[in-house]
Length: 89
Image (cartoon, rainbow, N blue to C red; front, side, top):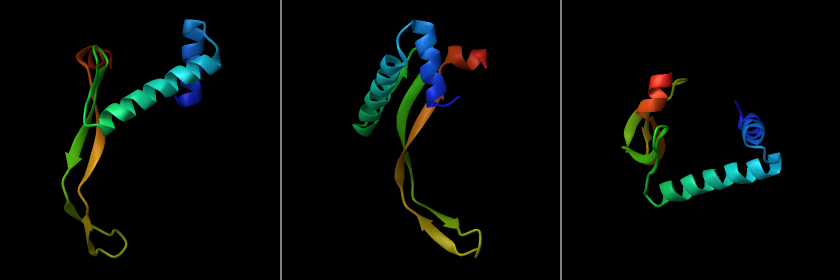
């Protein structure tokens, strides 16, 4: 499912227009992004938790040459499924 499919599903289920569904989805994505950027986490009970995780610097290998390269430390977004969602899968 891509963004357009999700917008269609939200529109059909709620009876709102696709434009309104798109605005709602964009607002949700923006809110999650801002919260994660500020170091917080977003918890949706029964669905899951979005959080930021720190990935430490490490050595990797160039697959073409086998040369060792340094991979910088960075922050990554993580999602952990809630108990209810995990149970349905």
